[in-house]
Length: 395
Image (cartoon, rainbow, N blue to C red; front, side, top):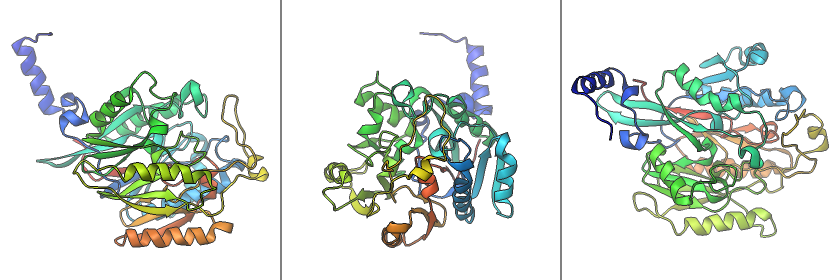
């Protein structure tokens, strides 16, 4: 045990009173928790597309898609667009005239704000709802085991840099490896994850499932973790939960689904449905599951699209004909909308059906669909490129 002299303790207590960062232990210990994504936001983080191995043909199509997403979200909340020096002028041109956007000069390795940004947690107190961030270890979805690119130091450093920029105190969960896309929370004590991702060999192999669950409780401030077995077929993130299942309100989720038993997605979704039907949340509620069909026609990358990438040594490479992990669950709740990917072409009817289902499930929001194939070919979709900043004050 370490002893502290009385005068040292008094100084420490005074410093804690003056600086909230000095009082920080863990979110759970301090009463902080991750709110639901459908709760009010103060803003959203998006990182401008620039990596040649993710965004083909100079990222032209990706820039157009990102701009459409930014415009849709900026209609009801501020968007912080992060961009490296090399592409800053290009981003300025695309974003000219869009209100409620702040372009921030900051370097990253790629553009997956959900996975590299801080996870924000809140606590309701005498001065209102206080906002802080959580910094996880990022290793490009698997590090030396099955990571997708070899150099990710700037991505790993991003959460800390943005929290400092924004003025948010930061809890440091390092060396625990986690990405924002691998968790969903209901804001009432429940987290949702997939076993395929969180138990993968490239993340935290020295920790048991029970130890990983305790880390989630400690840093997300939740009481219960719901584990479902699988995600979306061929999802290169080891099947992030945000591509397959998401809370739309406490006690209710949407689950990516197909009725086609010959589709490899069927077995994955059925396994997760079976699990969800046996689970209750932290409040003891049975989970209500709404099926959200995946695109009827598998979305596969073409030879022309593959030709536009410029891969570096050690980077995961795409192959023509490869099935992409297309899902309408990969949407973003803005303050007034559900911003949902559309895939077009043979899946125009699937796009319309997804919009219809989400409009019925979220009547308080409008559904905004964004042509998102250019984001999907990069490896993710709208939820993956966004990270919400919940409403709150930084003390």
